[in-house]
Each structure stands twice: as structure tokens, then as C-alpha cells.
Length: 65
Image (cartoon, rainbow, N blue to C red; front, side, top):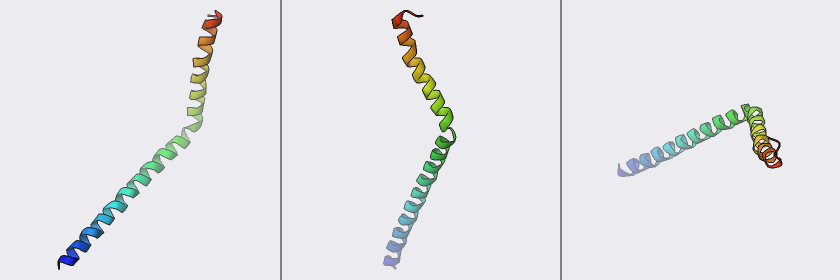
């Protein structure tokens, strides 16, 4: 009887581990698909921000503004 309790505890632990890994995979997939969907918008926003951060100090340094 004690042997079956130990086996059930091991099975429960494995089931919990598989459930946890499934949740991690689902979360990663959702995040990856969200990043893929907004990739072009994010790239455009990043490019615009980079240009502002580069061009504004250059214009100020050259006395253009």
C-alpha cells in the first residue's frame, strides 16, 4: 500500500511539471505571436526614435536649431 502512495506522489509531481511546462510554452507562444504581429510598427517607432536621438543633438551642436 505504501508503495502505491509513493508512486502516485511521483505521478502527481510529473503531471504538475508537465502542466507547468505547458503553461510556459503557451505564454512564450503568445508573447512571440504578439511581437510578430507588432513587429513592423515597433521597427518604425524604433527607427523614428533613433533618428530623433541622433539628429536633434547634431542639429543643436551645429547651431541649426
